[in-house]
Length: 555
Ligand SMILES: Nc1ncnc2c1ncn2[C@@H]1O[C@H](COP(=O)(O)OP(=O)(O)OP(=O)(O)O)[C@@H](O)[C@H]1O
Image 1: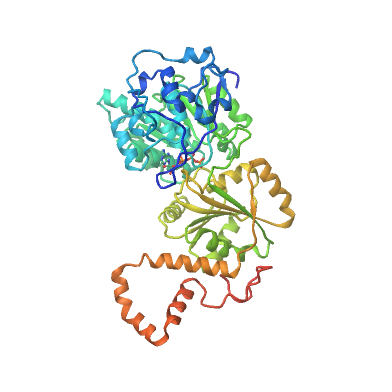
Image 2: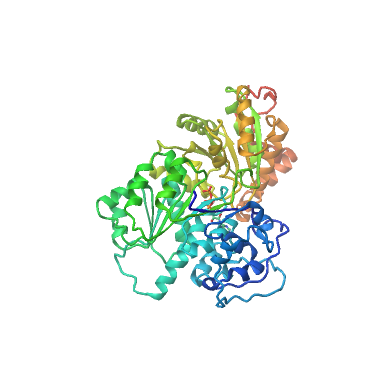
């Protein structure tokens, strides 16, 4: 990567409004009008973003960004190149105030973004940029090619989408004649259909006024063809279908100004190398490219050298850091092949407490069988590559909407899937490699929220668990199977929480019967109802806490 610049940043993830306020570094008031930002002024007044703008060929050490990048005057990172890169024109329009931070400096309303973009972001609850978004924003708006890396669930999609939407919106504001049949200005490549759809949704929700079309295999070609020929601003897709559309001349890439390669290393893992290169070769050379990748295997490095222009690397993970997103608590539990399935329901009950859980299995067959086994006590569905595209989408929507709480999936769902509020991830089988572990676990603890991940392992896998800790830089708390009291306590807690959501009108219908039961049986009536709703119509006492074998009930 000799021709690239590198930014390696140690960041603090900003807390969502619902979370406790953590001490923040001192930002100052800086309403910005982006194009006229002076870096030297920013340095003293807008330290994080300023520090994220590297000089063209400089390598900024992680140290330079400690404390969210407050530059030390005269430090060795502040070299001449930095100065050359500064746009020190006097056109900076921001109101540079010396007042102390009011906690709102990176508010999306103050970054000089188009008002309609600000409005839609704020409506979605996106009021402040996340670290990767802050770091990418300015170099992207400068037109630089970027290689980006950040932990799971930290907002990489909007990191590339915000600057692109800003540019497109401004172009459209200048030239209001948006023609029917117009050709795409943006192409986003994603490795899986689910990920492509998700990127499409994120862009559509942020910029409903732009036309975004998502193309992938397994669904009607004609519909996608019609959408494309009506005119489009942004195309998101998986490589295979994109090539079909390009080859049949339905998709013309001649006006693409922005290319995004999302999850580039995963393209390699799913065998898309050739297809990706075929597409890149068809793009106009005058374009801006952004590549996001969790790792940089040889092919991704080669791709960056060949198709990106003096890319700036923005790495918010670093080599030493823990690779998992903050806020994910890790547990490991010893199992045997005979006990692991029976233990699952209890783990879900105790650790997810009625919230959403994703269980990852190695094989499609296991996903089906585990889901079937669970369904008698906890609503669950399976998701894997043998399930039709249509059904996969229905399953994911149902899970998102809370129609069932446990999704049992193969690794098809481990990369990129953004389902809000997944409380628990269970690794039913050890992942094949540390990356998969990071991505599976990263389905929880997203957007600064907290989550839990449990790794199930057998005695002879102990070593692998230890090396996983080393490779990922994480630490497991070793736990035992939940005891009967824990399971009973958690399930009744969950039932009580569910009761709080019962509608008053429904309660009225049942009140006479409830009164009659109380008169006849007293507390016993309510206890029986709780036991039944908790799935304990039969006594739990036959469960052995040592082997976790169940003799009498299958919870
Ligand atoms: N600035 C923000 N404020 C609040 N929520 C945000 C912000 N940016 C992104 N989000 C939300 O955070 C969630 C995670 O974002 P996203 O899916 O882009 O993460 P990611 O880094 O691509 O994760 P992964 O590596 O797992 O694919 C999304 O639901 C997104 O809408």
